[in-house]
Amino acid sequence: MGRQPQDRTDRQWALSGTLSSALKIGALVAGIAIALYSSGQDTVRPAIDVAATTLNEEIDLGTMAAEGEEDTPVLNGIDPGEYRLSATGPEPSEVSEAENAQPERLVVQIRRGDTLLDVLLGVGIPRAEAHEAVSAIASVYDPRNLRPGQEITLTLDSLASDTPSLIEANLNASAERDINLSRDSDGRFTALARKKELRRELIRAIGTVNSSLFEAGSAAGVPGAIMVDLIRAFSYDVDFQRDVHPGDSFEIVFERYRDAQGRFAKDGDILFGRLTLAQGGTKRIYRFVHRDGTADFYNENGESVRKALLKTPIDGARLSSRFGMRKHPILGYSAMHKGVDFAAPQGTPVQAAGDGIVEAAGWHGAYGNYVRIRHNSEYSTAYAHLSRIAAAVKPGAHVRQGQVLGYVGSTGRSTGPHLHYEVLRRGTAINPTSVRLPTGRKLDGQELVQFRIAKADIDLTVAAIEPTTRVARNADESAPQAQ
Ligand SMILES: [Zn+2]
Image 1 (cartoon, rainbow, N blue to C red):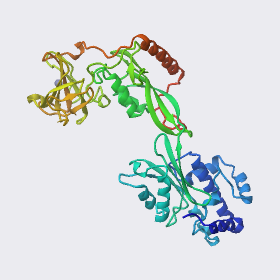
Image 2 (image 1 turned 180 degrees about the vertical axis):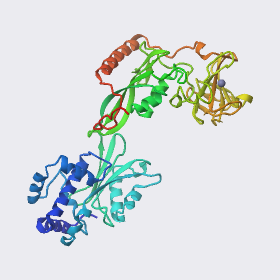
Image 3 (image 1 turned 180 degrees about the horizontal axis):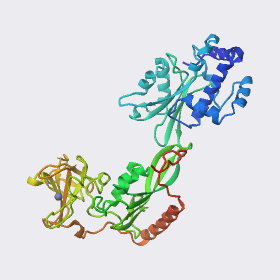
Image 4 (image 1 turned 45 degrees about the vertical axis):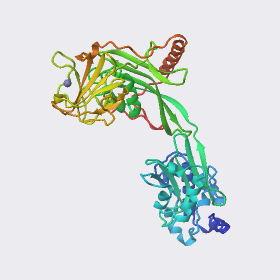
């Protein structure tokens, strides 16, 4: 159902002088709100706030109002007058309600089980109009792809009305694509899928460890998922409970993509990472894309950071050098203690240190819930005091490096939640740091040459980026002062 020509006549009549100037300014404000919205400056605040701010700061109201006297102003190609009227558009006598009749922008977050129709009906849009909008959107986007947490921005003629009419809708379909629903000149809904032009930028962040590397990353504004990737890359080489201490530092360079308006779209890959440990020296990792298109991290000599066994066989993001110190000492290997303990919150995932076959999975006396993995004819690793063993971990099962074997607990003879981890050589627990395991892939020949070029390029790029100690998500967000 489109707008009827009669409405347009009404509009011309309404705008031709019967409305008070208050309503005209109201319409103008509404127009600015829509224009701003379409230029995408702010997606969460209600339109009216944006309009108010803008009137003061950016728009020369005098000029705009003067133009408004003559014709309906067209801002960014949107005619604000277009949307003033609905089938029950304001009568001249309703001028006092002008304030309540301005278009409003509403950001609705999709909840589990919501359909697009539910969302539109939920804000009061009449059923027939909601159906029309959904079918227009369905021509470019399958509404069944909606996921909880996704946001849809609705511009309505008035929230105050019992039956608000939809002016425009914007759906962030994915990091690469958005869907715009608007009305054509006849008032009918049309939907467009727009491929976002994403701009890649590199962010270089540095930070100092206070309690854990993960927290240091959070304090620097580095997204958790990026920090987890960095920690995982270093987990082959670093024991995140014993090797990392307050005062150690890190540096990271990662990709961030923004849309044309500078809004955050998604994070990309880590290009470079550095960890400087008071006890352990400086470790650097470089991302390198192989000829087959796969990518991995290498140290400066072109050696893969991957090793046969993880030095931290537990989610390193959840470990701190101080966690649990008061309750139970964090032990390393000694004559008395034939393993290393990782103190971590109950339920923290425990990972297989390397590929292998499950030798034991079940209750094992003082060890409580216990898993042992055989990696080759020589080496096995064991994991004790688990609160729970993962369902797939049964004797004889193959496991991959990093696969979750179970969860940190305090079963058996244990004073508090921790992982007791052993490396066994021909059945005897040994000091893990003494294990000589073959390292991962080592680049050579043409690939090593390619790596050196890529590394030099990353080094130059990194040096050219001003480091930040506080990553801002939005381009216009000024970096807050250190707290
Ligand atoms: Zn122990």
